[in-house]
Picture 1 (cartoon, helix red, strand yellow):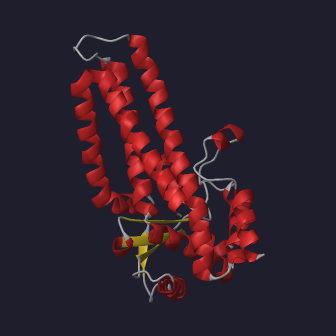
Picture 2: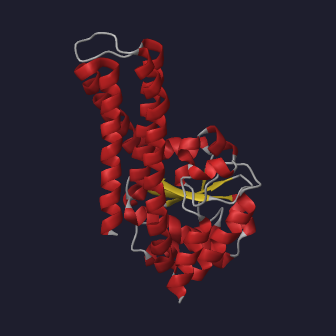
Length: 281
């Protein structure tokens, strides 16, 4: 756990440094300062409002003991086992089997699952999936992933601005236009790679924590195997429209071939399953 927290801290620091670098290339010291201030403002907004933004993106509807009694009771029992406050519970009317957690802290968390995952998996497997999401809540991954996504998006926006308006050196003189073009191409790529590394490290920890919460590592392993087999052939429109949210899901929801796998926000399913089965042994 400590190792992954240290790794995440280093990766987050790298995103902030990249943000400042892009700002400096655009406008010297003043550009760096403005970029960092812009990033801070975006992080403040993400901290308070990102959960509701994501839930609206996915047209999620809140459920309770009346509208989804079995599912809601399952989440409540798992939250109790994890020593967490009861999160808000949402369903998403999408066929792709998937789930995610969001919120700024355990006291203001929400978990969401697609109707597709409830139809595909057994109750035991769904329990493993929701335990995984509650592990994200307990580890406070939901805030870390949101901030990293926000910063990555902001870096991409700044890089695009650099293409149209050009960059300036520390003395305010126009910089090499080729340098601005390279920033526009490489900065978003670097930000995405950092964001993906954060997400992959967190998924392994959430798998382990979820297995401990539900007390059944094999259930989560079986669930991941089935989700991986079905999700690839079923598009998830909100995720395709907002790819920065892909890292929040228990399984990568985006379509793509072998090249896309190089930039996946999730570790290979086979490795995740192998680690879970090793916990059983």
